[in-house]
Length: 319
Ligand SMILES: N[C@@H](CSCCS(N)(=O)=O)C(=O)O
Ligand SMILES: [Mn+2]
Ligand SMILES: [Mn+2]
Ligand SMILES: [Mn+2]
Image (cartoon, rainbow, N blue to C red; front, top):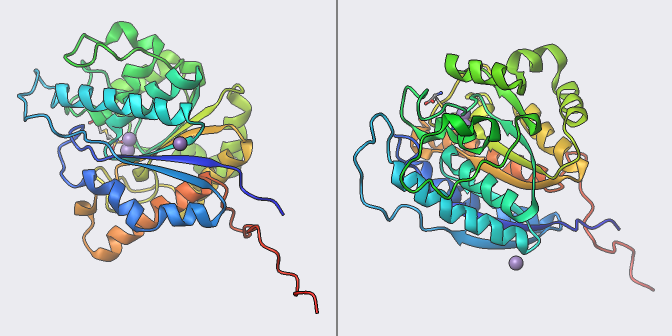
C-alpha cells in the first residue's frame, strides 16, 4: 500500500498590514477550522502545526511617504522568515497560511535560507512586483517580489526593519500563472527582467495542462516554492478576498496546478494567502473561499481526485 510520506509544517501568519482591509488576519484560523490538518492526516501526511505567529503587536505607525506600515511589515516578515526556516530545518514541507501577500517576503526568504536557491511559482491575478518607488497604493502586498529578486536590488531603498531582507530569487527561477491585473510599472519590470509569465490569456490559449508542462520544462530542477494567492481563482468561486479580479482560474484549474506541482516531487514550501472573510457577502461566499483554499492545499500534498490510498488492510479476517 502506498502511504503518503509527506511531513507538513503549518505556520499561521495572521497579518493584514500589507494592505488596508481588515479581516485577512483571520485566514489561518478559518482554514484550520475548515479541517486542513485533519484532511492532511487522513491522506497520510504527518502534520506539525506550529500555531499562529504573533505578528501584529506593533503600534500603529505613520506612513513613510506613500508606504504604509513599513516597520510592521518588516518586523512581521523577519519573524516569519525565522519560523519558515525552522520548519524547513525540521524536515517539513512548509505551509504558510496568510494573511496578506506581503508575507511572501518572509516565507521565501526563510525557505531559501534553509534549503538554498529555489524555483518560485507565483499563482496570482497580480504580479506583486511593484517596488517602493513604483507602487501607487503604498500597500506592501503589491510589492513582495521586488524585495526578493536579485535583479531589482538597486531599485529598493533602505527601509526601517527591512535591513535583514537579502534578495534571494533569480528572475530566471520565477514563473507567474494567472495574471490579469498587472500595473504598467510591473509590466515594464517583467519585460525588463524577462520573467516567464502565463497570464490568463495563455491559460485560455494553451490550457492549464500545457501551462504546467511548459512551467516545469522551463524551471530548473530546484526545490519549488509555490506562493498561491487565492485571488488567482475566479471570484465566483473565491469572492472573500481583498482584490478580486474577474476572469480567474476555475476551481478545477486551481486544483490542477497544485496536483501537477505535487507530482513533480520538488514542492518544498507553499503559501496560501489573501483569504479575507470580511470581503465575502454571505457565509456561503466565505465558506466557498475557505474550502477552495483547503482543496488547493491538500492537492499540493498528495490528494488526487481519482481517490487516495489509505494504508489499511481491507481483507476479510481469517475464518
Ligand atoms: N498592483 C496593486 C494591487 S496588488 C494586489 C496584491 S495581492 N497580494 O495580489 O492581493 C498594488 O500594487 O497595490
Ligand atoms: Mn517538527
Ligand atoms: Mn492577487
Ligand atoms: Mn498576491
